[in-house]
Image (cartoon, rainbow, N blue to C red; front, side, top):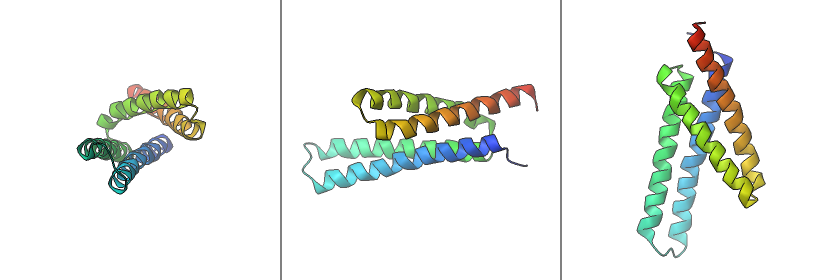
Length: 123
């Protein structure tokens, strides 16, 4: 099976988002351990949740890379959630983080929609 450019673009961008989520989970855990958090259990829960999300997003990226049909729907959902996070970042003035996330989410979303349209057309 030859991979299409669209599936490769979508897979790479979704994988980057998954890696960022997993990396941020590690960062949250390190900051919590090195500081004095009010609730270490709460911080561990947040870090665990972020790590789980990161792993699930990486599984979606793997499915996109392998061009599995099941991965397109979750991939679109991840991009819509990333756009919501981008909107919140813009409202908070965090443009340095919001712009790259928003651009990646838009490009991946367009690639996923085009992949779905191509699959529906049967070509």
